[in-house]
Length: 308
Ligand SMILES: Nc1ncnc2c1ncn2[C@@H]1O[C@H](COP(=O)(O)OP(=O)(O)OP(=O)(O)O)[C@@H](O)[C@H]1O
Image 1 (cartoon, helix red, strand yellow):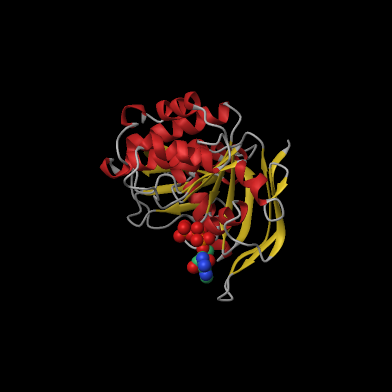
Image 2 (image 1 turned 60 degrees about the vertical axis):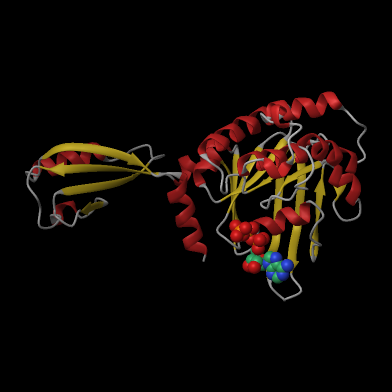
């Protein structure tokens, strides 16, 4: 696949001496939804800042849509739309004027039909003549997205799009992001809502302490690192797991009433059949069972913990 963003050997050391990015190498494919996950302070906003030409890299290069973001800043920037975490608009302007002006800032010719489409897609059309200050927080966030789309970017960055957003807007936003992807826009979102990455992303990158810890297709990641668990609720509580069962990955609940068996979701053989036969041989009966699968959240927490 063609990369639309190529980040090579990127390091950022702030004036304070703090190293926010450490030799980051990353390629974003054209037309994908890429979720960058990481705990607070991991370097997500810095990475976006460098790619959008707002933060100078200390070492390394970033190319966006074929343009070096430092040497060829203007050309690169016109290809990128950025929805920052903070809402920053002119409170006294109308929605229409704000979005229209933003398009002009990128040197694009006026296109009322395009601006209308953006506003309609974001359910802002009815509010086009409203002053920004009269809008709700959710509406203001929609305006930020409209501004970012005003110059028809090929790449859209959404920095923490769900922070402080209600469920309805979040779902609207997800829908809009999918529509944009269908129209060929590449989307990079940072989030610490795992649910968002799980729902939306084609690929997931995890960043921690300024380093990219992992980049994977979402489905492959979940299949590779996912574990399944089978919990058996026992007829009679056990005091301890019999020695004859010690070679199975079994865990006994504190009250002795349930046994949990953990197995590899990808494995050819789960070992469940043999384990159940062994329980039977030892007279351990169960009244019910349930199974569960680890979520992206479990995977994320275990990866970030391992590397800290
Ligand atoms: N201008 C600056 N000068 C010095 N340190 C900075 C500056 N900007 C950010 N940092 C530090 O760099 C690190 C990475 O910050 P960054 O904002 O990129 O993280 P983040 O992953 O986006 O975090 P969050 O999820 O909290 O937004 C943090 O420790 C932050 O304090």
